[in-house]
Length: 484
Image (cartoon, rainbow, N blue to C red; front, side, top):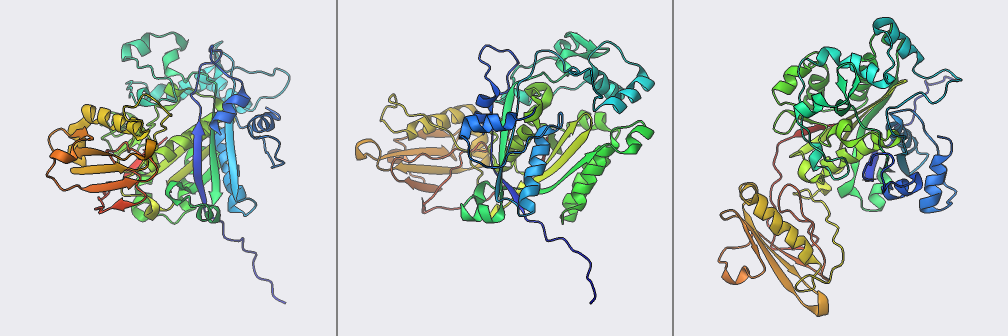
C-alpha cells in the first residue's frame, strides 16, 4: 500500500465583519473608566474573561488571553483568523484593551529575565544605556540616522477617537526632552482605551448577509526575532521577512504585488525623499497613518493592533469621514512589539460586487423633538446642508447631479421630500426645491416608515434599498493604497 504525501486541507477565507473602539484617553483623566467598561464599549492573567463577563455575561464561550507587548492586539487578530481558517470556529471576537500608568513604560518586574534582554544587550554594547526610559532609547537610536529633517502631517486632528491637538514644528522640538534629541511630542503617549474586531468565515458572512461590510484579510504573517537580528545588529529584518511572507501567501495580481514590494523594499533608506515628495500623505502615492499614527492617537498596548484594523476597515468601506483616502482599495497594517514580534496584515473588501457604487457610512441620529417637522431624517439632511455650505463646489465637481429624497410614514403618517442639488453652482439644499426645479433628478429615492438615509464622506451618496428611476453613478477608477 503506497502512502501519499500528507497535504493540509485548504484554508478558509476570513473576513472582518465588524470593528469598534473607544476614544483613547490619557491615564488618570477625570472621566477615565475601568477596563471592563472600555472593553464593553469597544465591543494580564484573566482580564479577558472579566471584560467579557462584564459586557456579555457568562456564556461558556472559550476565551484565550494574549499578551505580546505592543503587538498584543494584532496577535489576537492573528489567532482569531487562524481559528476560522482551520474550521475550528465560524465567528470570533478579538478584543484588546489597556489601562496604563502615567509616564513612560518601565520594567515592572526586577526578579526575572525580561523579554527584551537581548535587545538591551545590543543597545548597551553599541550605544550604552542612560537613565532615560528604555523604549525611547531603543527607538530613538534606531531613528537617529533618519532625523536630518522632521516632517509633521496633521492627519490626527480629524480623528474623533484620538487626541486632536495640532502642534507646530517649533512646539514639537521645544517640548520636554525625553532622551537625547527626542522630545515628548515625538513619542506616543500612554493611553487608556479598547478596540475590537469581529471575524467570520465566508459561510457566516453569506448566512447573515454581511457581504457589503465584509473586509477580507488577504494575508497575514507574524514573525519573531531572527538570529541575524542580533548578528547583524538590526531588528529591521524580521519586519521584511513577515511582509514578504504575506505577499507569497496569496495569489496577488502582479501589479499589486509589485506596487507593495516597491513601497516596502525600494524605499529603504529613502524615507526622507518619499516624505519630501509628499508621497506619504493625501495627494501622494500612498497615505501612511491616515489615523495620525500612535504619536497622535496614543498607544494603549493591548488595543493598538485592533485600532489599526478598525481604521483600515473604515477606510476600505469609505467610512473614515474627513480622514477618508479617496478610492482606497487595499490596506496594509504593520504592528511591532518589542521583545519581539511583528504582525503584518493585508486587507481588501471581500465582496466588491455587494458594495454600492458609492461607499456609505452610517450617521447615528439620536431621537429628537426639536426638528421642525418631527422627522428624524431631518437631522441627517441638516448635516448634508452643513457639508454643502462647507464643500459645495467640490461636491458639484465630483457628483454633478440632483437628488430627491421622499420619506414616507413619518410622524402622524406624514410624507416629506428633501432635494439636494450638487449639479449647479456651489450646490444647494431645500425641501421646497421640487416646486421650482425644472431639472430631471439624477436619482429619486423613497424611504418607508420614516427611514433614515446614510451619508457618504466622499460626497452626497446614499444607502438606498429601493431606488425609484435610479441612474447608477460610476465609482472613480482610481486605486489608492492605505497603510497603517
